[in-house]
Image 1 (cartoon, rainbow, N blue to C red):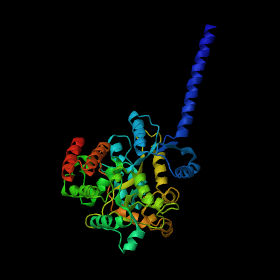
Image 2 (image 1 turned 120 degrees about the vertical axis):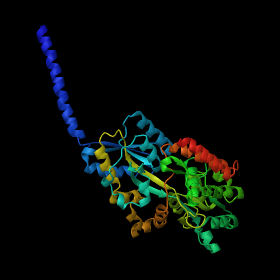
Image 3 (image 1 turned 135 degrees about the vertical axis):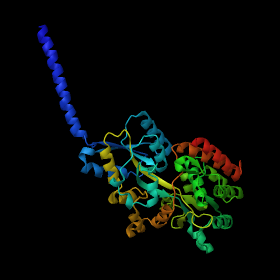
Image 4 (image 1 turned 180 degrees about the vertical axis):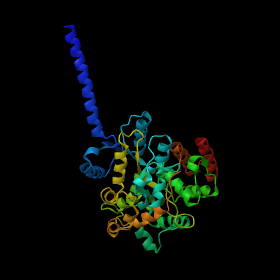
Length: 421
């Protein structure tokens, strides 16, 4: 009996081992020893619901590489926090990450995302500036997916009545905001001036438009202490002090500023193209009376900061080849067209901005193309979150009158130097 039980135990062990080998072989065939297999794609909340159908197109034609969409919160800060928690912990929940363009450097420097082979992606078909948002230390770490640039929205009906063209310089914008806006019961100009990421964007645009920079050498060198930075910050500070930027704008994010313009309370607004679409839609109080031009600068057109998102492959990705193939699919011409027409998001492919049918449907495309081509990335740094917090705090203190532009720029240089070192 002992021998029989021992033999039975041995046979059971043998069966388990053999079953393990068979199962392992099946799993290897299913997941693919060549780096192919099912994927998860993590993104901030899809407000228009366009992404699910796009991914269904991939799933129909790639049954062995099906992608599951994981929607994180709408808030960029919350999405960032959840992604970073997963990446730091090495949990590997996400294979492909749809990341804000200003996260690329940080994620790459931390080793959370994989470097990519340039030749696998249609980079030559993209608007050139967007590619720079996807690189760090000379290597490609992500692929541009959607782009964005700030525009100056204006009340076309008001300027037409005054016989005025839209402003091309800060001086013209200031003059119209101080003299024309009050005649029509309007506030002059607003952007996104609450101390959050939007204020970093607005401040960087002012500095860039004046010919300055904030950081150099991938964040290793602080360059903000310059006459250009003082001029750019002075433009914003002067607006609040003189009243052509309303004080309530110091609490505006994208939505609050859009609503102020859409409700007919502003002559000029700096915002992303989605605000133009909303202000022009049925139900808006200014529908049919809105124009859009590139942001002005001291002597002519200014410089926008690039917005949008990039697609990256997690360092923990289970199937990196499939992840790269999915990214190439999502940045192809057909899908990029759908990103615009179904998601109302600005695509990265240059030819779509010259398509007559798309321009009829989205008349701001030529203006947006001009803005993107002249745009620049936010300051690159492996500690971007700390850089942005410093910019927000210092610029908000200056705009609320706690510091002069000169003192604020000196303080910002010191704080950024501490971050860099």
